[in-house]
Image 1 (tube, each protein chain N blue to C red):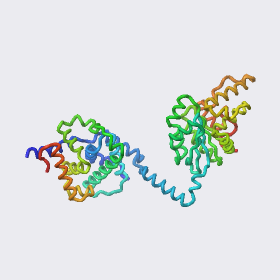
Image 2: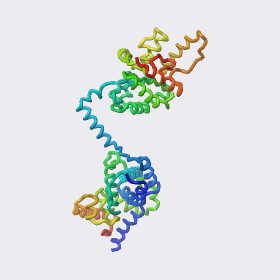
Image 3: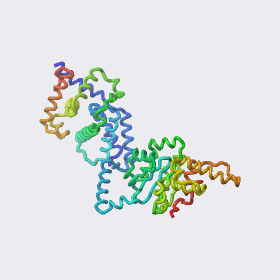
Image 4: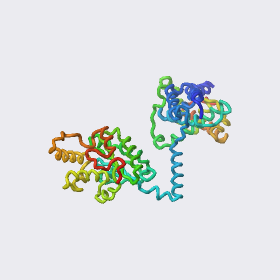
Length: 272
Length: 160
């Protein structure tokens, strides 16, 4: 009988000693307040529900013939460091495909899957990837070019991207002309790198596509500086200024208008 | 949506029970935090009107057990075992307590639930059947088997 009582008591005694920690309760209350915005709005989001909504949306679009529209390219975001990739964005702001222009770009596009993400989330994922972080740690220069057929959308995208890259000191953003897309691609370059090539060729007409293909954006910027400085030596105005796309905040702001020192007139909203 | 005051009362009223259910099902404190957040978020968003405290308590038991089950379905959680679940409470545990807790934790999930609900919370088999959505005869079977298993692990005859 003693055994009988003591075993039940042992169970009770054991569970009696288990209590929710004060910290656990406080953290839970904080979490609920955060999720409900201090009990003002229900936190209805759940990945399952979002996936369901997305699935329904995709079905609806498909049934209405929206499939074709979804996979229509409306803009290109060219991201160049040494990896050169382009995000092809549809009219809904979703990334429909990623094109790599070199081996590093191919590795990056394989490592970070951004298809069907909205372009800001995609950019965020890419910029925070280990590969890109490693390049930026090595002080490589990051150039992001936005080209699209709709000027208003271009401006909006550029504004959003500038906001996203503000914390990256070596980042330079600008808008470009959609007319360049075909030329750039037939030359085997991303739009961003092709724009840099055009600027280089303006400074040195002997520069060829093959000369820039293997160069990183940092090397291209340095080359531009060297060429520009060489020209300016003559008028004694040059005093060895900062390279075009690594000027931190100032460059982020200035290049928003499409005119870093290697700007070439395809500025903010300047779609030709 | 429920008010902050309602949530605060519910946290004070049911946290210990939820903590005990987590203790027998989960292997680490971080998972317990997840369960607390899931359960109380469900509560704050739920529009269920509870008839009385017992009804509310049964709701919390069911939601907690479902949340634990969902968490344990995850590949990672089913295979990673960490013994930090006791946390700061370990100091108040005697060797007997540890033995009992480990014995309960080693039971299959369905038996853990009936052991806790019957021996500690004092629910009858029909009440447990209602809470867990199981046939009452199934609960009786679970109770008998879990008593036998605990007897093997802990010895003695003490299960009423």
